[in-house]
Each structure stands twice: as C-alpha cells, then as structure tokens.
Image (cartoon, rainbow, N blue to C red; front, side, top):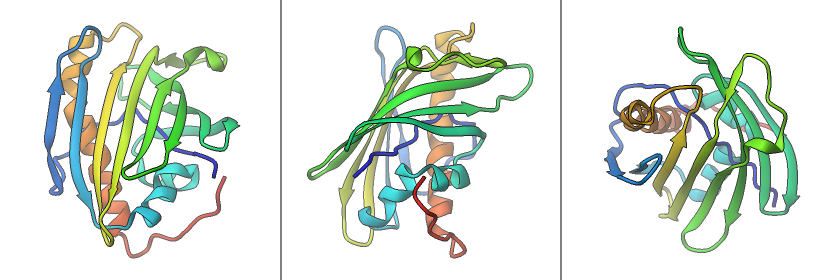
Length: 191
C-alpha cells in the first residue's frame, strides 16, 4: 500500500483534552518532542486520515498546498507541503519522505528531503525535519506516540522554534481528535 503520511509545521492551539503532555529531549540542533495520546478510532480507520492528502487537508490547520511528488516504493511517499504563517513570518514549505513500517506497533516515519523539489517563491524551505507516528491498535481506539524535530529555517532561532513546538504538537492532535470525532466526516478518495 502506498504510504501517504503528511507531516506538518503546525499552528499553536489550546491543549487537547486527550493529550498526556509533551516531553522534550534536548539534543544538538532541534530538540525532540514527544506527545502521547489516545484517539477514539481504530488503527484501520485512522491510517487513511493520516496518510491521504484529501483527509489531511481537512484536519490540519494552515495547509495551503499538499502534493504527493513521488512514490519510490510501496511503503514510501515523497510529499511537498506548504503552510501559511502569521504575519510577519513567511510561509514555510517542506519536502518530506514518509515511510510505513508495518508490525505491532505500526510506525510512520518522516524524514526531510529539502533538495528533492525546487524551492518555491514566497516560501522558506524547512531545512530539517524528522518525526514519527507510532500507532498501537487497541481495537476501538489507537494509542498514538507522535515525535518531531524541526528546524523551521529562515532566521527563526532554534530556541524559539523549540519553545513553540509543544503547542504546535498539541494543536495537531487537537485538530486530529476533533476530525476523527466529527460525525459529519466522510471518506474521501485516495489522491
């Protein structure tokens, strides 16, 4: 199956009720942040919501453009994503290789590949991003461990990016939880 996981640089939103809190691991360069949560949806139902751009466009805040550039293998997808930014910041874009690693737990990894697609006008290319979604199937729910490391580039100091990361991750999971709970949510065709 084609892996169509989408990474984001997220906007700050309130702490979701289902989050256990973000933990921070100090590293040289971007720090690693981890957030654990339980989503009220089966793993089988959650995967398309994380992997298909048609779903991600509906739940991820701030997405301007989301395009699958290539599928190097049955488990890998190269994705271009551009995000809006609040004034006075420039929008950010990223080129990321996503890969699905089957097993228990199922892991979706994300690795930045900024040189794989030409830089676009009006956007600052994210020079470094790494992350993962580790998904434990619990029947009617899915335990999620979301990790990320991001250098947003464009002169934003790493210390500031690291200060904003917990709120951004909480925002992502809040938006995702709202989407999976939405009774109006419909399936969409794979891109």
